[in-house]
Image 1: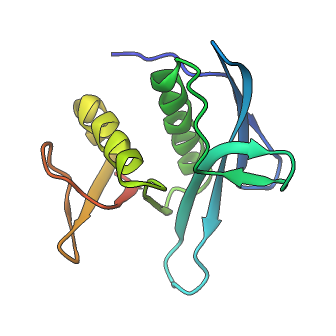
Image 2 (image 1 turned 180 degrees about the vertical axis):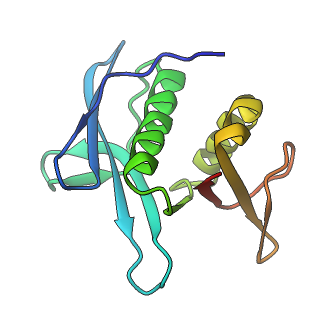
Image 3 (image 1 turned 60 degrees about the horizontal axis):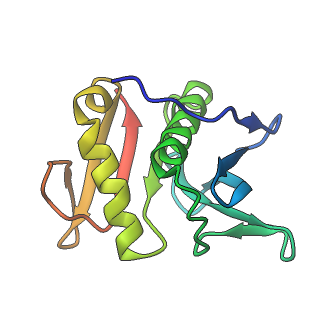
Length: 148
């Protein structure tokens, strides 16, 4: 299954990607940024994602666009992961939604494309204070991803 992503712009020499969601509520700037967790020896990066808030000049991960393009937006976020891993093949990416429903949305996206994802990436889910290999139908509170 080949899903269509929005074109994105990567800032040179940074871990920052931006793209625009286009839909019923107009054009909405979205940002994906990878933050290195400095306290860990391994190259672990947190994936931050949300609408760009011009007033605060930062990502708002609680805003809701309701632009009718959720699948295309999530596909674009996944495309930034693939691009990021090309530059950082040893990186481990941690992702969790800003709310339980968003974490569940990420999980459903992973499950939907699991056969394709697991060919490129190893994914673990966090449940009961433990990281475990991802399985469909299990509700996780966070995800770890690394290239195979």
